[in-house]
Length: 382
Image (cartoon, rainbow, N blue to C red):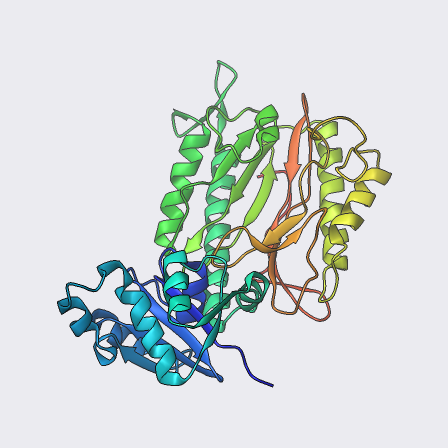
């Protein structure tokens, strides 16, 4: 059986497919090839030493000059925008590969040039997605670091909510300042940076703003109302992400909020009990649990338009070099495989009550899930 030759052209900063294969966030474009079990990277002089140190994931580093880059640059009749594609064609000819599998993000320009050179270019979206779902050890380490940083930042947010004082105007104040989503976000971002991670989009919602989905969240944090904080930092060394959400109530939580929280907490356990390699029905189990408790869900929604309360979103998603990637866990769920990293996030939301969402990022195994760190408290009390 002939093994496929895998090819990608691009940089490791913008392309998660390339970053997964080469392990480095290089800004300049390079060529990655896997042929007959051997992994090559073709690059310029500034990247040669970088990739030379990555014997853990690469077998051979080939310089552009070896393939005649200099002569192509000097030949003014050769289109400059095709030089990288021509070098890819020459490298394929050198190793004896006449057909390649490329991701759906492969540059059209390069594909056309290779086809002009009689190279068969096959777009294999699913195949390249599966390559990324099999996390490399360095990716797992990065996700672990991102998760630890997220927990530290979440502790910072919990402390601010816990130590906030009621102002005479009815709002909350922390260390003399009005407690706002912006103030909490700024403090969390600073903590993340100290941990070698970064996030500019921490979602912080209070009260009915909890129903606003992926809106960033602004303004005062309300006393006695739910405050959902969704923190998804990426590790600056590896570019990998983690994702966690907790719901807090600064002050006294209503019985309605406590009821929602208890059921979301149970739904998280329902999901964890269901998630394992070969399964794809965790979303259905969670939706059925919520339905049995009398809450609206996407599965049981018979009204017109989108569901705007209850369990109104998917159960979760893959996490890696993108914060949202395969596998998906929703109405069209993907079958899980060993090594998948997924964020699991059941939630319930109602106008006038607020919302509750809890989320952890876990590793899928044959037998179930493994948390990246010790589970962080789910308590409503910050």
